[in-house]
Length: 89
Image (cartoon, rainbow, N blue to C red; front, side, top):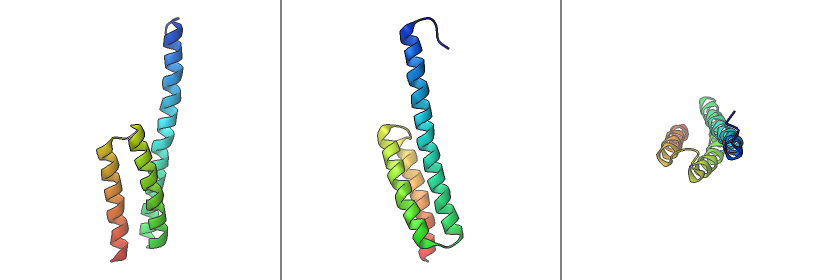
């Protein structure tokens, strides 16, 4: 771990908690994206739109908290929206 410095040990604990929390958020975003892709492949427009709504909410929250960058969030949302829009055609 860290040195015998108490503040350094506390900082390590805090960093580990934050890392795990951020990892959980990113994993949830990836899972949501996978749901959209799966629904799109099965041509289920309603399920894809519902999953897209959920994913956009998660991405916006993560971007606001600084877990993902703003442009990354916009790019992911755009790609998934395009995928869902192809189902309408």
